[in-house]
Image (cartoon, rainbow, N blue to C red):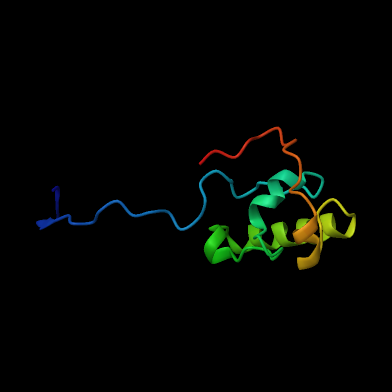
Amino acid sequence: MEKENGRENTKKNVRSKYRTEYSGDHNFDYKDPASLARFIGDAGKITPARISKLSIAQQKQVSAAVKKARNLALLPSGTDAYDTAPRPELISPVPFEA
């Protein structure tokens, strides 16, 4: 371990609080249902920020985009729709990487 100011540095690698693949100025587009489907659970609910690892501003953008896409019928709305509707087609130009 390194020594700083006479003390041993015992801090280990800490996982980031937010997702690193989305910058702070990333714009979530309502016209891209494949990327928005990442933030919707199996029951059709929007995933909370503590689970999706988004900042508060990003979470507000995602929820607004999902609501707008549901209103325009790009995403299904309600739990009954998720039982019968297929998942959106993957037409996103930026694929999700684990």
